[in-house]
Structure formats: structure tokens, C-alpha cells
Image 1 (cartoon, rainbow, N blue to C red):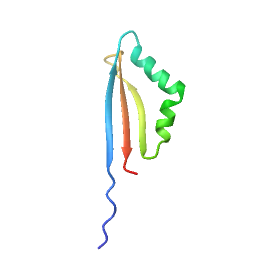
Image 2 (image 1 turned 180 degrees about the horizontal axis):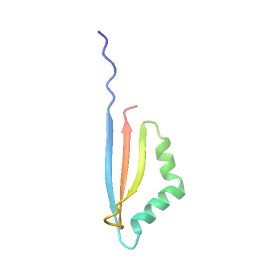
Image 3 (image 1 turned 90 degrees about the vertical axis):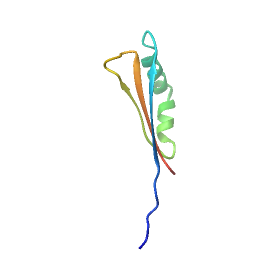
Image 4 (image 1 turned 45 degrees about the vertical axis):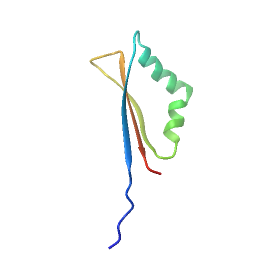
Length: 69
């Protein structure tokens, strides 16, 4: 019997909270500067996405998922 390789995945959920739209401005800057795309292209990156929190428009959720490479 042959055992397969164990793959480890790490998911980080971060809430960015600010005032006067600063959390959304942070996301816009990450996207427009190309930093978010560069992170998405890194080896092992499975997901790098931002979600708006509808109950709190001053908060953005970042989902950053990586697998062992």
C-alpha cells in the first residue's frame, strides 16, 4: 500500500476595519498597485480575495489561502 503526500493548507481570515472608507481604500490600493496580483501569483497561493462586510461598511475581510509547495 502506497501512501500519498500530505498537503497542508493554511487559511488566514483578516478583518481590516477603518474610518471614512479607509479599509476599502486599502483594498483599492492593493489591487491598483498590483500587489494583490503579485501575491496571487506566488507559488502556493490558492486564494487572495477581499469581501465587504455588509453589516459594517468600514470593514473588509481578507481571505488569504496557501498550500505547502
